[in-house]
Length: 123
Image 1: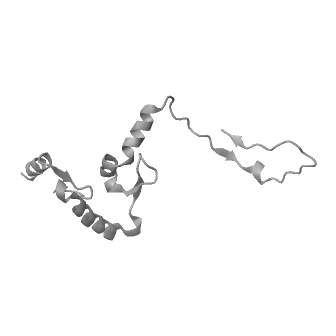
Image 2: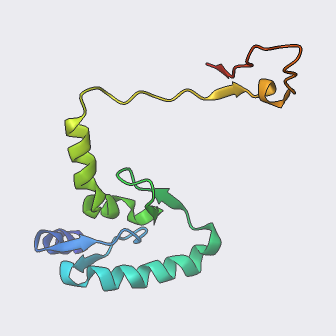
């Protein structure tokens, strides 16, 4: 009975709250922002400093509470720019190599005895 009502509400323009645990509650679209503020406050009260933040896949500067990631990524303003840049790329992104040893950087270079450069080692 309640599941049928919930499906009916989501079909009529409702959104399932990302903070609902166990039994999800459906919120009308017009009340989503106010409702999220309330549930976010309760989430902070429950988890405090241990609240998990996730990074948005469209903008690395966006850190969002874990329950809101999906909603954020659906409405992220950077999504359009990300998709446009990805569409215009001629070649796939190249992964960067990382330094495996910094021992060459820590050694003192004596310019009198060795004129060669000490290079960093990459994988």
